[in-house]
Image (tube, rainbow over all chains, first blue to last red; front, top):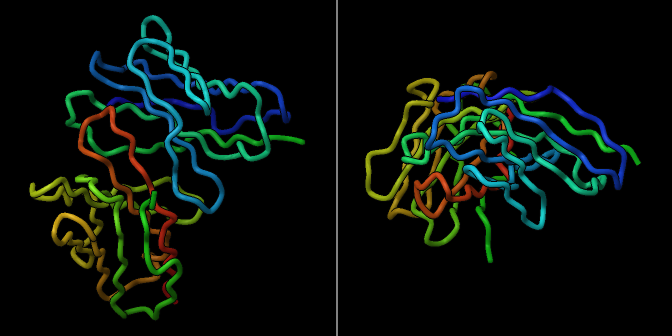
Length: 112
Length: 115
């Protein structure tokens, strides 16, 4: 499975934008980039995913580099409820990597 | 609508006893996953069910662990002769199918403590 690299931790202030980076230099052409987050004492929840184009939804935006070797999850205005571990995961578009393989993720701390 | 439901929420058991953890996936979801997360650690894949296909058991850590899915819906994860290292939160998840574009929905987990 293609691997991803994320910073262990990041810190942000409330109501400021947060840019969470992810490197995936060995990504294949059929790999989707998925982001999940895990709030304290909860199961992971889906945030966003994309293949080549930037994506926006109600939770966040996903900016994908032109060469797809990196991506950035953007939280436009961080709230205290966004404090969580954020996981960047690659999933093979042909379905062979149907299971999510979680790395360590980035622990996001949001300061009031 | 209802999400993925897991029971029990918390379970304390004595070393050597068997435990069963139950998962009710979202209605209509054909894919079901079990993961485990030890305290302060990442998520570890255990087993995957997809429709009537043979399950992917590649993540089960030992033969003390088994899982079944009856009628393509409810799943039970069984741990026999529990050990202290089995203490973890066991997370169940479901998905509409195996497409990589599908979202995977997780339950709140079953917290298992082996004393």
